[in-house]
Length: 383
Image 1: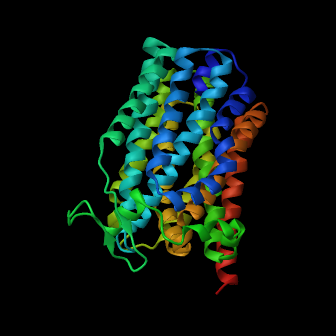
Image 2: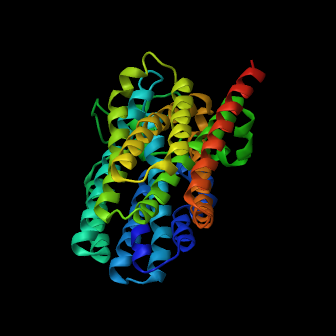
């Protein structure tokens, strides 16, 4: 999307506004969407969200103008974030405390794989067939995901308050209470979820620290995905080379997430989260001196190793600290903060980019240092 904006001579600020639209609607609706998923399960939300995202990715192919480039992120962002909320809810609640870190790491591997394939393939397609047909190819992946999900069968069962499963039409012993409550039916006490204020979740010191870290880690991730294509274009890199830089970042997240289930047996979540923030601090301090492809590849790989650790550990802490009947809402609040970062950072980055990219990179490094300091201060205060 960044390179498509540059191809139609959009300014850096305009591209920032365009990319912020991925997160604008999710920022306002994901807490309510989390409550909705807590009440009705994930099946219907996933279906409707996939339809919306597919429409969004097809729009620039059907109508290639600035209007479609502004509408597409709205549809894609809302659809993707709702699906992500549902997937994270399933991965978290279908695990016990011992399995959760491993399951979140495996889920994150899928995002690393797509994060490598997507930018790398998009760069090659842009150089070979152009921007418009690149959107068409990406739409094929959405249709494949919709078909796969639609053709799967899910148990039509309900979970009782005591934990047993009523299954009038199936005697399949492989059906678990987790899959039953997550895919097919809401919890019995779901009506009480919407009555409690969302900011009540912030009163838990660990959740507050977590949400601060989530915002900063997301900022580090998004600044890389938004500014690096523009920064690379200014350095004279082709679309294929820029895609390779973004793909290298995702490859690094894949590698570190592959070994994370083993490492997490010996290292607790918070040291890994703070370590990821420290890596981001160092990388963004050094990025303004990266002037060629090899230097950008090295920094992207290092940043991917750091940030790739963070997301599974963040999710593990959240599912441990949040109330069991408000997991969807807590996930929605996390994604709201993520989307707030994704809404405002591209616009701010686009605006400050006119003053020089070094100001944006160094400002983020300073915020990372402040976030690390806040976590240590908060933990000492609440001992």
